[in-house]
Image (tube, rainbow, N blue to C red; front, side, top):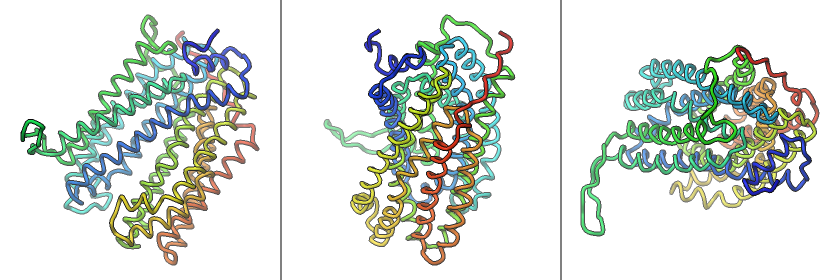
Length: 482
């Protein structure tokens, strides 16, 4: 068999068929799956930056209204993502075992289950949207816009959920390319929709003369609609490709029940519930960090915000490699190849540590130039550079935690890693930040973050290399109603 159909498809088939992969092939497969996943992560960050800059042109209140509910939207998105992962990991296991009919059975059940789940989450979101800004302590001037933004976001949660499910299913089947390309498309569409929905009709100087450029002038609501409409388009394309064109998961010509079975739901809950708990814990920690930083003053708040934006560029490659690790480990589990599973775990973790280590060096060196583009205020620049240079030392160990977590997800072992994340963030980071902030200011908060990330990376490596329990996933429950 030649590598003509697709290099990654061919190499993944070697896993399923129980054939040997050389060291070079293992490295190549890791790179082939990681590269598009990293591109997707970076495009996601780019979309957030574009949203922030376009809304920022409307004034401080518009930016603040979205910023107020951003942690809550992240929490809801994380819970929906966890629900999808509970099913997509099962699909990876079945594909690794060569059981494509079983993978399609899980997919059919997942479509029904996550849609029902997302409708409940959407109902909760719309129900609390009016009171949420007040609960979060938002100023009266921004509450109306914040409520409208969160209501629109919540209304389209079922679309977001299907987007997560379709992308996760394709990635776990080894198809990173289509979700990544559509992620870039979503970024482009977001810019286009925002351009017309946020701003009012205004004059535009075309090559043939001045003309009126139509705009809806919806402001913050336009930003929400622009984002969700981009998700509608790309989510629809993802789902259509998954159901009709995916060679491993396409349902065209394959019949079966869409009624969720108890065994499939139990396996999904075993994977997803700890992940949902972790997302809630991290969201809570972000809120507590904001509470710690807020009394430090306007300069500290602004420097903290800019530094978070810059640092996110460094860790996005780690999340891309983690997605590849989930796919590789998940298929190795299904294929019953524990030694190959361990090798891919080591390759992906070391790759993440090396790449994010290099990114950390670049961040240390180039942070003055990067921050100078974002703000003209010298005090903010100086403080932001100082905290970024503290954080740069933690990037390799942060990568270890990120990618190892992806490994554990692929193995279906999420409870202990989620508790490790929770304990590290709440027990180490927030405790140290609370103790150091009064004397060291924002530098103390970021020093606490640096220490915690190094600690978290260390405990994840200890579990990865020192424990065998995570590599023994529970047996898949028998299918019902077959």
